[in-house]
Image 1 (spheres, rainbow, N blue to C red):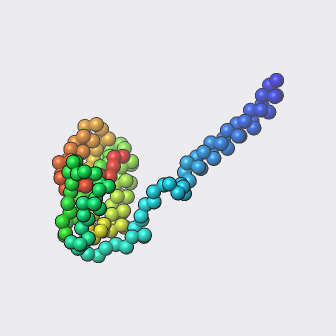
Image 2 (cartoon, one colour):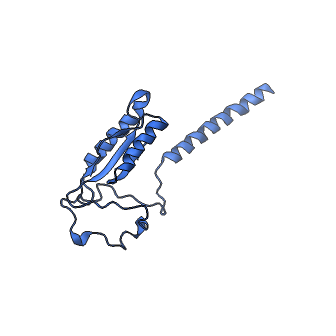
Image 3 (cartoon, rainbow, N blue to C red):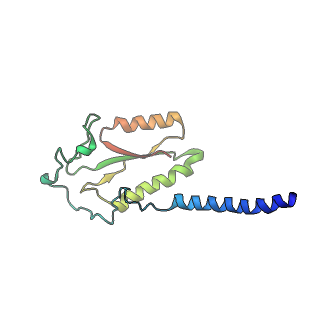
Length: 155
């Protein structure tokens, strides 16, 4: 009976391992389904070289997908930059998580360039110290700045 168990266990183990590899490969593959929304990349969209004209300013119907505005709005005036922040653990024992993310954000801003004619300003990168208190303090700093429209993080 022991011999029978070995002869069944080996193919079963190999089949289980193969199934795991197939599941991982399927999860890591690209989704080419027709229902998935597509993102526009920097290569697909030419960068604008000047600020938007008044006629290009979105009207109320153009912004309907953004909600009713009850949470507030940020208007970026001509000549101003779009303000975003990076909030990651960039110090201490876990800095190896946050530093690559912070560097990636800097490179992405440099690589992508302007958004609809506006520069993107990362401002001061914030350290969440990989703690509840550090994350809360950094988040409060971001929320206090009414011109920040987005945050990338946390690690």
